[in-house]
Amino acid sequence: MEMFGDPAQWLPFTFAGLMGVSILVYVVLDGFDLGVGVLFPFATDDEKDMMVASIGPFWDANETWLVLAIGLLLVAFPTAHGTILTALYLPVAIMLIGLILRGVAFEFRVKAPTPHKATWNWLFFIGSLMTSLSQGFMLGKYVMGLESTLGTWAFAMITAVFLTVAYSMIGACWLILKTEEQLQFKAVTWAKGGIWGLVLGLGAVSLATPLVSPRIFDKWFTYPEVFILAPLPILSGIMVLLLWRSLRRLPNPTDAGAKSPFAYAIALFILAFGGLAYSFYPYVVPEKLTIYEAASAPESLMIILVGAIVVIPMIGGYTALAYWVFKGKAAELRYD
Image 1 (spheres, rainbow, N blue to C red):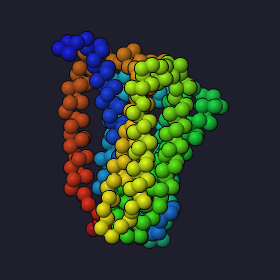
Image 2: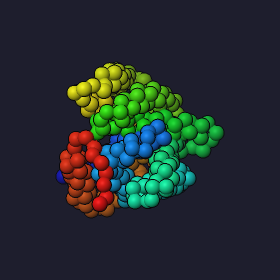
Image 3: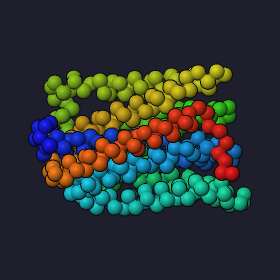
Image 4: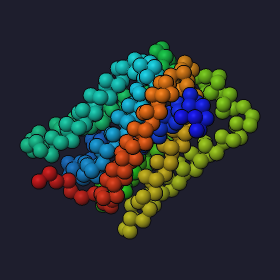
């Protein structure tokens, strides 16, 4: 255990990194399929079928990353797991109900009699909306240090709306990549509208985070950190401009550049997540518990690490395989 130095230092850091990567992958991958569900009311019945077909092979694998992230939090940082889930009990419950609704509606909308299909379409939308809003609410509460005041609840609700819009934007970018003709045209319009919600959401979280804690403020706005970290907001601004430019060139007869909006949206999510991770490190519970204080015993972490080394590549492998096998434009989703 000591070949890399003090295991009480590098093991918690390693698991924090693994958990962070799992959360980021989940937010990007399940973010776009949640966004597709949020966009349901704006599509026709035939378009809804194609939207579901575009995420059909992937959504199960996408949600696996959420299970992995929560599992790592539980086994590697059990004290933090209890503190965070206690503070976020209500939105977590709403998120789980939303995920259940999505899963059931996803299957039943295709198999149910035609008169009932519209009901399952609405339940798929409601489940997607509940999940997106609850995750945004949890993010807002976390940024505010898990405090329960009128101000923190207001900020959490605003963050819930902005994250839902961000999910719808990356979902629209996914539809641009996977669909054609009228649905692709609509997806371009949806993505253009979603950019502004994403920018406002990033701005709100970015401005609020340093104001919550003097420690975080000093990490961003003291010399020389203010210059070292300047590329993060600059790159984010560049990604927004490139995203807008790519959307203005779509759709086109050759489908050239259809991959670009989704790639730029992913880059924006990565930059935003990187900024948050830097802000809160080394805390896993903001301003209360560091990853080193909340970590399990090094001996336990070492055993868990062996399992993680086996499990995480397997999850990554079958996720990558699904995206490789079903690359290209979406086809009609069939169950026969």
